Length: 460
Image (cartoon, rainbow, N blue to C red; front, side):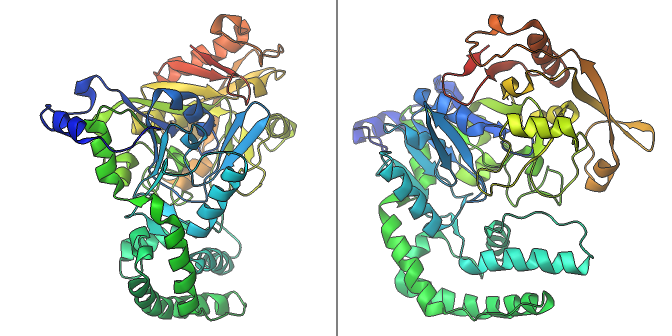
């Protein structure tokens, strides 16, 4: 069985070696979504994992879902990194993740029931922040209160998993709890005593504005429940920043797994219709403690069309039969929520922007098979606002909401491509579509997904 920490001899050799990272010849990589999520990042991580030693998630919480299909078995992963399906790999939840411990333990148990090994191969940062039931209550009540105050306009579309309020508490500091604190029952009980007293004031006011009743929180019972979660997770909790740097020094290869996607990044996405963490590759440094200079490859994952869940502008959205056909063919329903996704043509203006933000060195184009039978195909290559062409991707969501897509039209392909095993077996029109994406974005396509299974991927 592999071990995560270097032995003393390995550590000594590493200490006497010059700078680690790309200089050693060991390539570390990241898989990042370049749209609004649901691009198929889990499948790409699953395909790459055999070539790496650790798979690290650096952001997000139980609001993100990665789907991986192995043969006829489909796995829906919410907090556990996709590398867990390889028993000899180590999966790590970095400090940038917010952890719902009850849901995580349920996910672990579900994987074990299916024969997946989850033991010392899963590590959780003691610096990661903890999601509590009051975060979930605040998430839903705050959305309802704002919706009510604005007359039903501009709902963000939260999943209600408590992610935003948990990250807000992380910034507020005094009302936050970190995973390592779950291991100290007395300290946890004292913190929750005063945190709950503050949260009750906030939740009672929000509930009143929404015309709902409010149930007081039993802080002592909550401390007991979460203390038990901490004890159950104790074997997995560690200082992951030290663990990752020791692994780099020992010559192990790291693969970073982004949750959500770059257009949902709290700083660089379609704000305010975003998630609450840095889900571009820029979040790796803060979310794990591993500097970006260690990355040799950033694989930007792009769906062959566009989808979005929740509120916010989406210039290429198709609210018609074509959009519905894409939704059904691509099974575009949320892994976490089951919500139908909004569908539309591929927006290359957005992808070029996010590829730059995340420093993508290559593209992974997924779900190309979904477009089979559509003719013509369209690609958005520009925007007009008020009849005038604009440069680049706007930072203001209100401007993006007014943007009209400028399309290039390309001939479609009718041939099924799910059995294609090499790039030269793709239909010419499908290949032309791929090449046009490369040309506009300025980044090569190195992998093409032609179906949901592991074996349905072309390495270009």
